[in-house]
Image (cartoon, rainbow, N blue to C red; front, side, top):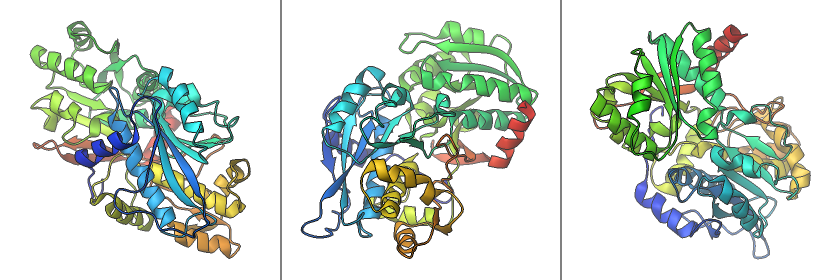
Amino acid sequence: MRNAKWRRNAAAGFALAGAMALGTGSVASASSPATKAHKSSASSSTLVVGGIFPFTGSKSLLSQWGTHGVSVGIYEVNHNGGVLGHQLKSAYVDDAADSVDALPAFRNLMLHHPTLVVGPFSPTIEAVIKQFQPNNVVDFMVGGLTTLDSMNYPYVFRTSSSDSNEAIAMAYYAISHGLKSASLIFDNSANSQGFVPPLIKAFKALGGKIDATITLTPGQSSYNTELTQAFSKKPAVIFDSMDSQTAATLFSDGQQLGDMNTQWIGDDLQSAPQGAYAKAFGPTAAQDLTAALPASPSGASYNHFLSDYQKTWHTTTILPTSFNEYDSIVISALAMTMAKSTDPKVWVKDITKVSNPPGAQCGTYASCVALIKKGQKINYQGASGNDDFNQFHNVFSGFQMEGFNSSLNNTVRGTVSPKQLASVVAKEG
């Protein structure tokens, strides 16, 4: 991403996961792994930032993305005076990326009285999305689930761009590289299936032709039948989304069938350098595997985030979505400051007041707090972008297309700007 590519800090990530989530529904608290938070006063209390992430299961790597961002957000706030005399601390539960486990995990987290919650990711958000307002806790979910594009939940916000936009970016990138026939291979999860309608619509609007749409059942021992169907008309590109275990089986079968010398364009999960997807793809990953990833922002706000990230995790190579979780915490703290209250029923109404225009632009917690104390309306410019929420509490951003070199480290193959995304939407209309 820009000059600083992220990579998985496996040792720190797995150690953190082990310390924080001891099983589905369990909770533990943690301060930043790099340094303990400053104490504001002997009498100050702490506010809990809850996190619902999958520490176990096939999508457990998402817990590293989430906890890294939360830790950096807590570091930023606590090292700049806290919130109204309070320091922040974290508490996490494991939803295993399973909707059955999500509600018990949520109830467990509520025992720790969080002021705000970060997460869950797309696979489980719908299992708990109606619980936040009745329990008086503000939520910043993570991920691009398309069914939330027009959500109407006053206590739920999203700082990451929708998968419908990611799908458009995938289609735009393919067409711009002359790839005009495609087969879709997506597993049957709600998250993966959410890509399919907007991807087909965008690809056709740009002049592309869909050869086949394949839905995978995860965990099968072979996908030869599905691959044969997908490649029957020799498509120029394969669009795909699936969990890493299913991908390992499918890619292995594809190698045996000789199908891996085709361009494959996947979602953000496949972008991890040295990750399971790229390794399983085989020797042609450097030429044929591309993944869409929300475009990393630049500028003073992002650079400040990188500085905090380095102090917290001792690296400037960041994990995906970590700037989304960071922004969620900073925005929440600013809303509390603006409202002069830590009661979510009060400060939830100030989230858009501190994040949306008009107002004096500011990109760090300290500078924004200083403006608020002067009585100014602010417009927070986040590490992940402008963080301007629309009427559905969603934001809009561009994407960059991540490829791999021969060492399976990331290389940027191209970008799709918000303006280009908007041009596709116009064609669809």
